[in-house]
Length: 396
Image 1: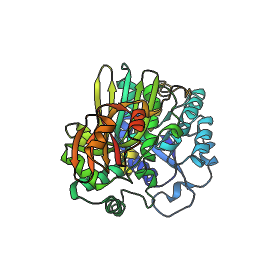
Image 2 (image 1 turned 135 degrees about the vertical axis):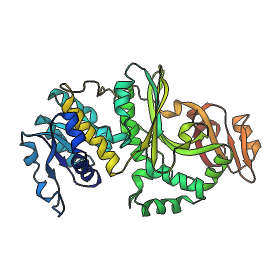
Image 3 (image 1 turned 45 degrees about the horizontal axis):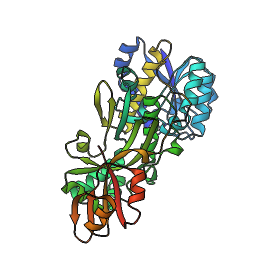
């Protein structure tokens, strides 16, 4: 019997316990012996099917040599960080869905895991139930990864889908998402791009092999997005999606989160509702897309339990998971060249005076247009005399 522990019994922690119980036969067949949740760390005891497994004392996990894997679902970088370090120091594998902890402390925790000859795995931290980190680090290992981008947050994608399908204003679509349980009471991390930002940092770390400091990654959300821009984009054959994007540059790498106009014939433009998608561009494979539900109790728990199984089966650990602590070489995303969408208070003549030839999308008191490929630095210089109502990148 293989014993594991869970830290935290919220949505994901409960899902992990359910997956272990409900899929016990499949898990046993693949591991060769049964898997059992022995202990669950909680802050407050509560009645339910797991009451007899609960403890509020981490030492009950830390000092129990029969517990081989700890699943961390606490969240944040406070207690989760402390307990993860102590579990690794005690020689236990740790699995997590905690994107903030991995983005901010992953390099340190991976180094500690290596020192203790155990695994620190976090497939669920980026795509929830979508397998993306394993393919990135193993299946595409023969590639030079040039770019990773994707719809990394289901809440914002649901809101944008409702704005397109029903013409709902942002605030109304957000309330609907909250009513359906897709958005938190405080949706800031989702709608301001912070959640997607942590995920793109992890993807960039693994893709490029160097630490990306989340504090250096610009994160723009959708809270200021106008329904007018959504409709103008759709009329011109584009969809607006919030993308996290990490790109290899000649002198280094960059990453950011921002709304983009995406041509409707791009497969990622058709990803709707709470679904996520990640595109990895390898120099040998070209674009490879991973699609599915990026959150939710059971999809995320499924990825956690898969990591538990991999941690136990790795011999003795997965060496390809990790990155250098070196943060040099991170460049401003404004160095990237792409087309830009603008909506301005002014005329086509004003647009042409700033950008030369443009593609006009609308001119009826306001002017909406697309520029040629240009860097963000050039945009800042050339648009300084315009009264800008909206500005977004266009995905190449």
